[in-house]
Image 1 (spheres, one colour):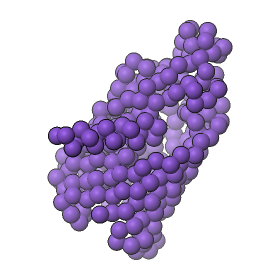
Image 2: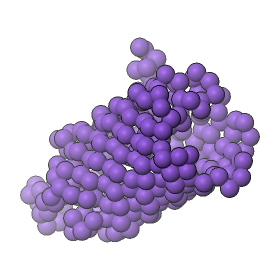
Image 3: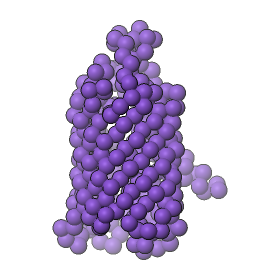
Length: 262
């Protein structure tokens, strides 16, 4: 139990600035080579300073991934959770993910809006692998935002193709929906925030936040080392772009990650 609590604390510290993925993407237990599978490494991200920012930042984060054949998993990308399915064509389960903090000190354009704290989000996921190349993905997460009652739901699809034994290309498209509490926390301006920041009040309603297309190239260098490089581009919905501090409608993120498998 102490080890598990330690892992959760590591996840929170690693993800106070980098969030877990919308989707859980684990290797089906049938294909895992060991009962316990570990990978360690690092990831470099070039990303907007906050959702809607036209300023960018470059950061280096630790990469940790652990997956057990019994269905448990823990990683910087997937969070902490359990896949109840033993069928390689379908994955479903529960997890704890992380929604990162938004500090007003990170950009002059957030001054007066206050901070939104890092939140651990309980949620559920369901993935269906049509075959080894095509998958349908979904998730639901709750607990983010100022009052910790933000709700998000994501639906998507992933296409993977192997161009050789060592190289694989992946493309993912997803749409994200959020309730009014989430939208207000990350894109809204209440009366007090308006007074402090000078922005006009704005109260967005629930709805689509964005649609995102991601691509990546995975290189299996040898039995232990691998390198993944990719990029994503999002298109915010009109409900988001009406926010007075959203200055970039189509944010782009670029990343590269190296990992060592034990």
